[in-house]
Length: 477
Image 1 (cartoon, rainbow, N blue to C red):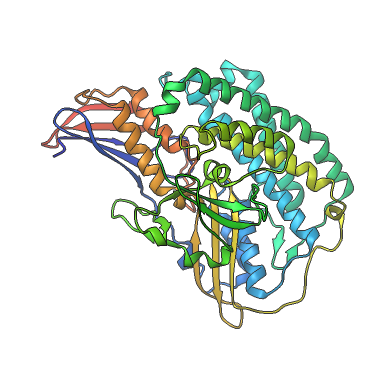
Image 2: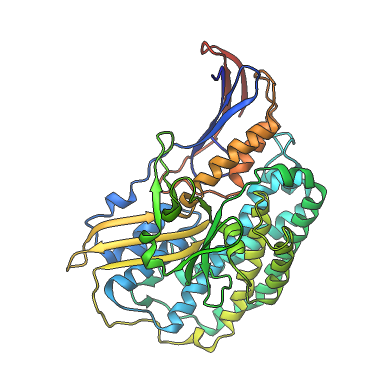
């Protein structure tokens, strides 16, 4: 029976609001740790009654970090619902915007959110273990990181008119062409972006080599893996088939995204508002899996771009061709994907169709139901809409990328707490608690949806004895 409970609230350097509770036994050992998502998502319900064509503008408001993912997933669902597949040039332009999203999100996470832990140390003073501390420690690297994110955001702005909540994709295509001068402007910056990503990869690999012990004991566990792939089994971030493999790398399923309900169900726990998706045929919890960069690189057999392909081969060799299970290698996989996305930008901009005027299919073959699937930076994102004959939504189902990883984040929190917290009798060092938070940050969760906080977000950790008396308090202002 637990005699002490440590509460970490809020979890920092993530998008959204969550807390962790660590339950200790009589010896001060971790009995169990929980990851609680304590904010409510209501988008499915309050989108009911809206017109389907509004969804590409409504759903980006779920998140200010990855609005492009929801924007494009909504547009893809509407394409299918109204029976209007976009022309090839429109699909290329949508993918180009998506690559900008991947670059800016992955770049920001590695350098600004995960970077303080990796570059300054898990045990560094919290006063400097942040983006300001990174700037002070390495101004040149910080500038490269800022410019990398700006590059991705400028792609989004060029196409969608603004960097956040773009207005671009519509049912059947997009509403703006790409001009020659805009294409050339992006091309002029892409090599510098690739160089910044390669610096990040060098930093990550060097850090991993120097911290092998942590890498190999920090939330390393088996699971299935899930992600989109090309027809040839390559890495796919915009449009592909869903592939699910088991912990040994064996194929379990490969299916069209529109059929996801035949394969995925959602489990509920009373200590979290976020559901736990799993593979139906193996049940709960046998059918749990991971998505996002680690999941996608584990299911993909190749990338199709030269620089990322070379990195993928090194990544696959980490576990002799078997799925890579190390939670901290999410950061490594994230940078490989960013490199792939930057190379895809060059490929897309070199395609003659990218400047085409044929960007909208105005023909309609109304179906009344549509599923849009895309690889958001954090993992596979599903938008599923049902509408009446007038196009008014009757039902909406969203499975966000972070939801797929809910089990994995909970498992990682429990694993890290049990690995690093031992018998301190309530006197738990801040750096150990930061490692528990870092287990969540590795998955780069996006929990906010529509909830955002303004101002300072202090952290207060209270350790209580069996009688509920506070025996120790740690504060981070």
